[in-house]
Image (cartoon, rainbow, N blue to C red; front, side, top):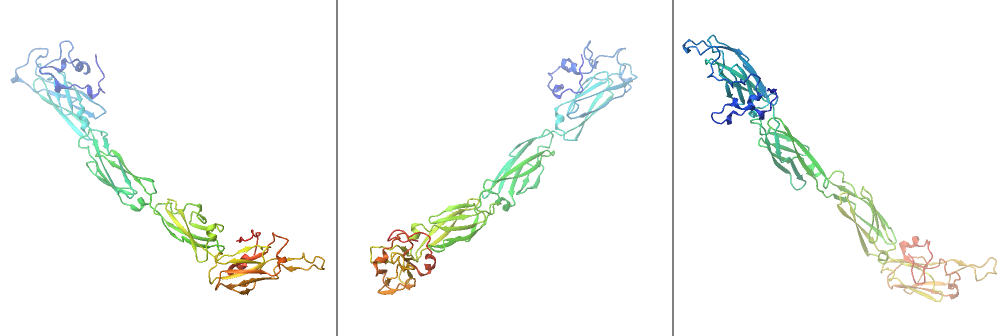
Amino acid sequence: MSRNISHLPIEHMPDFDNLPPGDNPWNNPIYRDIMPPGFFDDTDGPPGPSIPPPGGGRPDPTENTPAIIGGTDTGRITEDQNNIATGTLTIIDPDRGDAWFMNGAFQGDHGTLFLDMRGTWVYLVDSSVQSLQEGEKALEIFEVSSVDGTPHSVQIALTGVNDAPVVTGNFNGLITEDVDLTASGHLTVADADHDESGFQEGYLSGSYGDLIMGADGTWLYGVSDEDALQALRQNESAFDVFTVHTTDGTAQNVTVNLVGVNDEAVIGGIDTGSVTEDGEQSTTGRLTIEDVDRDEEFFQSAGLTGKFGWLAIDDQGNWQYTLDNSNSAVQALRAGQTLTDPISVQALDGTSHDIEITINGADEGGFFKIDPSASQMVFSLSDMGFAEGATVTVTLVGDFRASYFPWATPPYNQDIFQNSTIIYDGEVITSGSPFALSAGTSITVVNHDDPLWDNDDPDGDYGIQIQAAEQASALLDFSTSPVNNGDFWF
């Protein structure tokens, strides 16, 4: 039985190092099975140097003539491509019975050569060939001889190919903004090729930092562009990927993950404003913002409610505050008194900033309906928020009526307040004319003609208007009916 042995796996090669003492490898049926036909004498067993060739015994050694050996005496092995080389030596020897070879097994550095008496040889490579590097050459030289001792060399040339290494270790690093600026790790490599279990040293540059690779597999990463790192937003990730190489050139990636944290925005600009009770009730401004985190130099647009008004802000920082002039706390302010309304706005990254609005109080008066049953009405200026030194106007506001002389042609129209007098500190004050509060805290409006106050239109726009002098022109424009007696209208 024979077998095609041109691609015989290495693990099936004979192991002559482990033969028991005295054992003959030719007796092993495995070896007999893989050799070429005729390599063994299947009838009488393997030939040996002790068996004389046909035709008689050896000639006298003193008459020996060296054999002439030729034939195929070289072979080639390429790692992982062919594991066997074969050939046949030829021999010419004029000495009778010497045209034969000394058969045997010859152990080399990377395999074993088997030779039979006819000159047929087989070289079987072993696993040590895997240690050859890419393109590395090795030469096996086996000294064989004919039966008369004539030596001859069989040479096997071996060529290595690259064996892919196995790389393990720390392939990843982590950098957290404002926490660390370096990361390190260590790689290991296992390579069957000798002297290749290492790495190529190198200095590699990335987008955010640089990596130094050592021959022993140790790597160190350092951030070189801190501004780029600081520009990362909260939990934003960036990656620096470096390709390192083992000694034989096998590539391996080392990846460094950089994670950003929030950098608080710096907010400036106009963050204060003021409004006035019953006066200017709106104020505007614009905030500025600086943020090293990219794409975050904006504000969160919002409509916000404060304690005494409302504030609207857009993403560019433009804001407007509107006073709730009807708020009781606002209306309770007197001249010189203030309230503050701080309202917190947010940058895009959540950084907060307060816009503080100052609310100024104002002297107040009111619009009072006539009490038809009273001959006079007294008003406390201090209760209305007026202080000494304030300039006040008291205006009698009313219309004409024609109900007393309906038969007249044309009807007689009479001012409802034509017989009324305004008295302050004992002095008569002209309706609508400003006067300064120098003493006293009240004014009195006296009616000298009671029937005229008994107006037959109780919902008409008439009564007594008391206000600060600077507000007089604005407050004389009544668009709402007056409230009940004794209450003043804003």
